[in-house]
Length: 196
Ligand SMILES: [Zn+2]
Image (cartoon, rainbow, N blue to C red):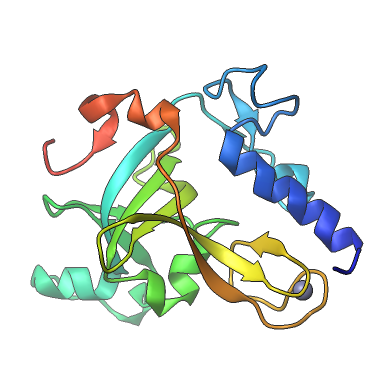
């Protein structure tokens, strides 16, 4: 494995979403629900937003907004083309913010038009979803934490781009993993599903 600055920076990105403890310290020692800066902020790439304490589970399929509107007989001009939305089981459309984690849905057709579970939050007074973690289901329906991975450098990434470290190609990666406890514990009341 090669060592480089990119690896160190991205290692931080990788650990943070897993333990939801982006503010620093050990995962065991702090509450996963404490407010914290997003990993992107720590990496110097973000805007100065903070992640609110309440993170929720959003279920549905990410689709192109243009397609979703067409199905609803809503016509729109081409400016709408780039936007993608989470379409929940009850047909609500929640636009995704193309940030460090949401951007992959704009880039990667493989992540769209399939069942996903997204851990994230909606910034106050906006309809938008800021995605923090992405889960997909494999063909057997098993939950898979989903990100990108460089096999040479063994580092995760969250959008399609040359590897931060070796500049080589990266691949979409699926890892069997359960949802984080802080969204599981919220039960149905915190899951934005067809039930509401
Ligand atoms: Zn690499």
